[in-house]
Structure formats: C-alpha cells, structure tokens
Image (cartoon, rainbow, N blue to C red; front, side, top):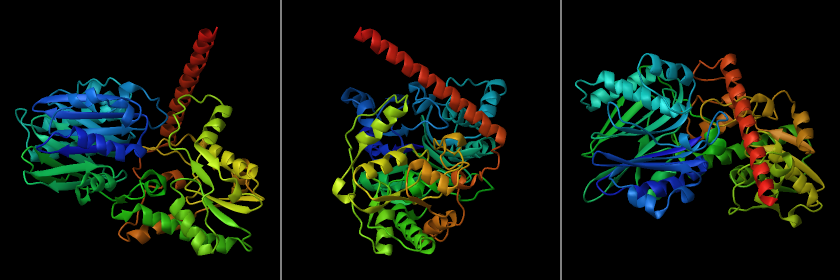
Length: 506
C-alpha cells in the first residue's frame, strides 16, 4: 500500500506536494519522497520515515520547480524497508523520467529478466516500481520517432506497459521537457483520481491516490482515472487522455473501503464513510439473524477506522455506543519488535482502556478486520483486565484467509489467524466469548449500495480469487519464501542491535 501524488503548475509545487503527502500519510509510513522538475533538471529527496521526519527546510528549499510527484511507501510482499527502495525512482535514458507507483506487479521477476536480456536495461533494486519505470522508459524509446514525444506516442507507450505488466498499478510520472503522466492498471484495482485548480494565471492539475488530497489542497475533483486509461498534462497546462487498453474492467480493491482509505475520501464514486456505515448495518442484521438473545450492554469500537461501522451497528441494534479505548497519536514508532512481549507492549502503548466503560458489562468490540489476531487478542485481554464480564468481538470484514498480491502487505497464510480455522477456533485464539464476521456478500453489497455501478471487486484476501488471472500456487509459494527470508534478515538485524547495545552497556 502506498500513496502517490503528481502536480503540474506555473508556480512552485514543493509545498503542495509536502502537504499532499501529509494527507496521504495513512497509506504508507515507512518512507517518503518528492521529485520536482525545474526546467530540465530533476530535484529529488527521499528517505525512510514519516513525511515530517524525511523533509527538513533545507530539503524543501532544494526541491525547486513547477511540476513534481511525491510518494509515501509501505513495503509490500514482506520486503524490508530498504531506503534504496524509497520512491520516486528516476531514469535518464532515453528521457529523464521520475516515477511513483502504488500497487504490485505480479510478473516483476519475468520483466526484470526481459529488461536485462532483451531491452538492455539495468534494475538496481528489488522494487517492482523500478521495473515498471524501466518498462515505461523502454516503451517510450521504441514508440518514439527520433526520440521525440507527443501525447499519441506517450499513450502508445502506456499501451505497451499494459501489455507487458501484470498485477495492480496506479502510476504518476514526470517526463522532462514534456509533462505529467498518470495511468491505472486495466483492472482498476488501486485508486487514482484527478482534479483541477483554476487560478487567474493558469490551470493546475493534481493526480492523487485519494480524493481527500484534492479536497484539502483546494482542487476541484474532475473524475477517477479509468482502468487502462492514461492522462497526460503538458507544460502548457493542456490535459490529454486516452484509453490505452482494449480489455478493461473496474475491480477496485474492496479492502480500500474496509480499512486503507480515509473515511472522507470518495473512490470510484463510492464514499468510504458511507460504505463503512452500511457495513455496520449489514453486520447488525447478521447479528439479529444468528444471535437469538443479544446480551450486549455496550458497543465499543477499536479506533479508528471501525467507528462508523460500530456506531451504525449500535444504532441498528438499539444498544448504547461508547468510546472504550483511547489511542495515543503521539507514540514513537517501535522499529524492531523481535518478540511477542515487545508486540504486546506496542499494543498497550498505542491503546488504553477507559475502565468505567467495561467494568461489569458484556461488551461487543467492533474492529474493521482481523488479520494476524495478535492485536485482537491483546485488546480482548485489555477489556477483561478492565472488568468486562463478557467480551464479544465483531469484524466489519470477512475472515482474511489469503495473501494479498496487489499492493497490501498481508502475510503468508500461516500468519493469518483465519486460515485453516473455524470461527469457534478463532474465537478461542483471541480469547473472546463469541466472534462474528461480516459475510463477503454483505461487504460487497455495502459498497454497491453506495454506488450501484460497481459490481465487481478484488476481494482476493477474503475469497482467494485473484482478478489478474496469473497468480499461481508457485507464485504464492515464492512470495512466502521471500517473506520468510526477509523476516530472518530482520531478526538477524535485531539480534545484532541487541548485541551492540549490550556492548555499549558494558
């Protein structure tokens, strides 16, 4: 999961991009980067960390130019947070291009080999985004005449990218001397929107992962970029767009509505907040159907994304809604958590229970989803420690049983608490008195109710159906092997740090 921005203006854009990244910080907390274009010169700064920590005044002053792109990163498929993989990426041949990408290419290894053997291009990191950048650069090279570009040529190059790249990708790129390019994969899995700000001097265009970035930066929402479509804004401020694939369908990632996106965003015509309200209604109806005697005294959300669902569920069941947990928004990040004790400590530092809301009551805790179950187990125990008589647990999403390969770091099946377990077994694992999950059909209905035109989704983490059609058991096994290797490296690093600290202590 990542957040991307691209802007073209007649005024400096560094502050605009920084502010936009702050708004999209929820989409990635591991690394941040901004690339601006001043004439034909790129200025780039990126590093690991939150936006506020990566950029200092001196960095911002160096990011000169009236066009640029920005990126916040959360590594996917278990990759380590290597600062070399922070985005944007840059390539200088045959055109200067800076690119940021949200998603995951499912054929990145195959493409990397093609680039080296056939296209004579070198990829320096393990990032599929660098692969995608080089594929785009190569397609621009072979489609251009005498190394000159125009919108028609650029769109032909994007068509070539669609033919070669599989998986999910929402992309922003700046091409030196030409303008801002943005495009979306043919399945429309990852979100991408475009907006405009008309000033007295010019039209400014902004492309972003979520509409909330447009709202907060003063841009008027134009539309979602369609699956397979590319938009190009030249430096004169003229907007060009074209459908670059003959086979497209809209299948937005349903987990965007469950958890990833901000509630004040609208994605593919669907209000995220409205969808979460509907999720609460459907979950309440299921409780009515399956729970003969609802002995719940209070409904308590687990901050923050479950609040709309929990509130609507409580209203529909006519049960009091209360805030029972306070989230510490200022806690420092726990960079290395090698053991279970540290993970428990992290949960306790981030959430604290309000004892009076639990003591002597039967409480229904509502969360947006349950992935590993570690956090859920700790929260249930916190409720019991605060005096709850019974602790029930409701998930606004169905059981997460399968890895996500389209840009969300969902772990291997062995780490997912719902894989191979019944609801009763999961309930025992997290220590609850009862657990209830949203039905997948109801989750889809909640999104469709907000926008009836959307009828198909990527719900692979719930149903194991991968919309791109190229995800095999061998591919999933390879992902799991890489994840295990990455975890081993992180454990080695943690152990080495412990030894170093011990030596310092001596």
